[in-house]
Length: 362
Image (tube, rainbow, N blue to C red):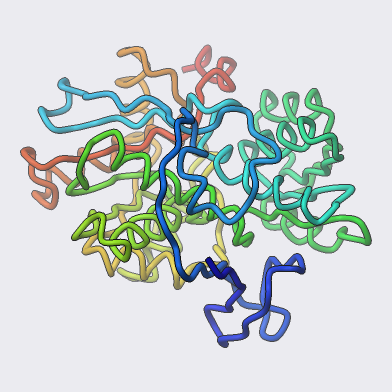
């Protein structure tokens, strides 16, 4: 198996014996390319069951992956909920953190640096703590208090900024000798973790679903699914891709706008985990949607809250940003874009226990 970096913009390539999170030639997103991929399953019951396709050693793992896939008959006979919020730190980000922090250990990093609205920061802080290295996390000051408390309690240095965009800028500027920038929106190793969701869905369902509906901000889970299902198709394990439907929040719907044009609406006040206004892998995210025959759509806060209450009252303790996927599914079925007899997976990405204070106000 040959592994190397390649820039999706200018074609620059390099060996993976150096830490790269973006192209040093043009500044574009850089990918990890694997040639000679072979799938061999092992007996583990976490995402490392698929270690043969992950170009990293599991140097740090908290048991991420193999979250429950629940048949949701109350939504439709073929609707499944993928409970990614039951990952170790309460979000799908643990898949990416496990790989990225494991690679950081391979590079003998002293400190990992991340910018986040909360979930990625918690995840990186936890995996860095487990690995015995420092973490410095930049977050917008209006991030939920519960998330900021968890980041600090996990031992990371928390730096509050005026906005989500400023958090990203200051994080990059702060990187010095001995640091590595994890930057989940950019980091190619992070995607090598999130791609395992595709392998896992096939393992749990036994076949490719017709559609996957998921919350999307920077697009790390969307791209992970696209990479994973494409690898499975190239391996000859599956013969088609599922349609990928990206559900975005008002005010932070850049992927939707790239496909459909400008969307006018008041920015979300509830979906704090979905507030990336300028995703660095925008073109790749659009390509993942278009190439699978999927789409992007926007959900407002009222629709989101209705979906959130609906799921929580049925025992799915998720964060508001996760519920946006159900609101999107309802809209897709209303339009007839997704048929009610199709096999659908709705991904619930983040844990609601971080939002008890908000629940008390609803």
